[in-house]
Length: 161
Image 1 (tube, rainbow, N blue to C red):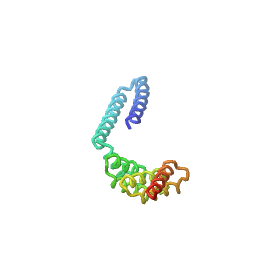
Image 2: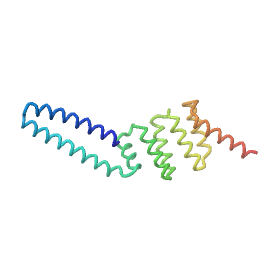
Image 3: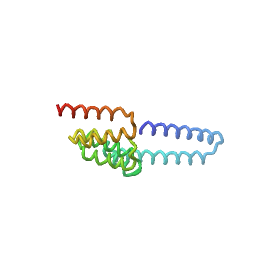
Image 4: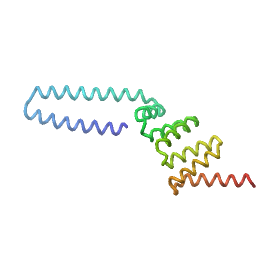
């Protein structure tokens, strides 16, 4: 986020310098004062908005929640929010956001695989197996799902023996 912001500021500074040189060459004092006031107001408001967002996004969870609220049809934010809940030890929340993501776009093998991983971690092997199978229906060559499904089947055989 900051890299894009820095690039944007460089472009604005470059354009401002070009305009400043053009105005200075023509000797228009009123335009120089106006240009200086405009760039000061613009950069000041840009800095204020950036600072406001820094306080809004105090951690990853608030960042992804804000993205979900601001872009409800942007399903990738749901996946990232689910991953954040998973990483913070809240598997039920992770499961909920994975399902929301899959309701918007079910053709995402990585989300099916992530969901299978969470189900497997909480001990629901049946749902985990279902999720890995769904991932393979979407993409037959999706290795993480195939490997996890192979592990589940291998463990199932060991339990029977």
